[in-house]
Image 1 (cartoon, rainbow, N blue to C red):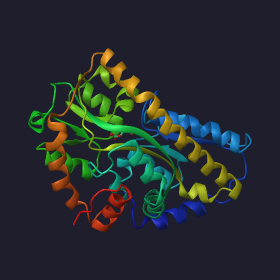
Image 2: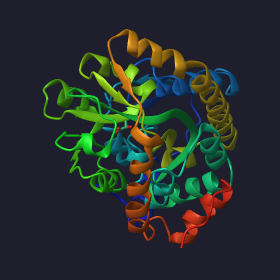
Image 3: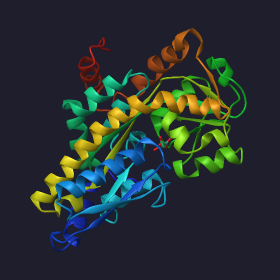
Length: 335
Ligand code: MLT
């Protein structure tokens, strides 16, 4: 079930059902889509440590890894109605609930970690925070940066768009990503994140894309052999809190939560800088083979930007929204 306009009503209802404001100590539940060892877990651990410190030991939280509390998209619904406190998930799994977030998942918009940091921590990020509260009933309070989503598969090295033909590729249930693969001549298979490892293992699908940190955390090296170093989406993984639960906290607790989210974000940025290269080396040691896309990815870039961007101008809030993002990144405007 996906909420959008009716969400305001659901949030108001959930807030009123949480009858009294939360004043007692709490061990919050944090759903985490990925397994241990990735950017999501690291963000969660950094958040918990700072929350304990900021709330002077009053509040803590526990991580539930590997989608134990539901698929990433399900956790957005659970948080919206106040049955889940927090979730850490890939931004592409929020887009179906709050389409303007799609500006950050349009292919080849974010071209570096610096771009990702500028956008999420500047006015664009602030706008997206407000929109997700309004559309999805969840508040983004921190960001993990996991790196570019690289393509993996179990069949063969892929360096060109042509090599992709015939491969069955899993994508999240995200229209932008579906259309991107279509622009490359592939009809991808939408599948929940929580089912993806099994799908690859049982060969229901041949491949998928996710950052190196996630490939490692999910042990995809056990079921995938080939990596193509494409850079079409830079993966950002927000930490969200149920807006209903957040509004029920005292001002002091809200401040502690926001401060913990901010500190965890800074930690995540550093983690990516420190870890990505070593993880890449480790995946090769474990038998994975990395291929660079032909011609500096030119063909992938041209097909995706020319055909996919215009299809989503409306859903991201108009071409001017995309231009605002591009301006922020000192990139040419589009018409
Ligand atoms: C997905 O592919 O659904 C997500 O990127 C998974 C994740 O959160 O790492």
